[in-house]
Amino acid sequence: MSNLDEKIAWYKSIGLFLQVFGLALILARDLARKP
Image 1 (cartoon, rainbow, N blue to C red):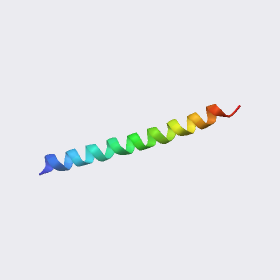
Image 2 (image 1 turned 120 degrees about the horizontal axis):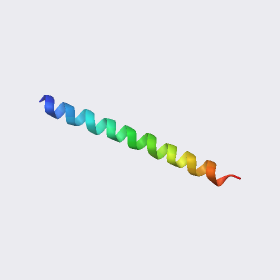
Image 3 (image 1 turned 90 degrees about the vertical axis):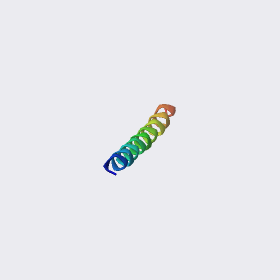
Image 4 (image 1 turned 180 degrees about the vertical axis):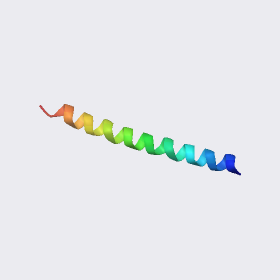
């Protein structure tokens, strides 16, 4: 059961990382577009 909890926590951390990374990517793209 603990193995499943570890997987869930791992997937949650990966999802959070991807969300933050995507947000940073969009912000960087918007900043780069402005002169």
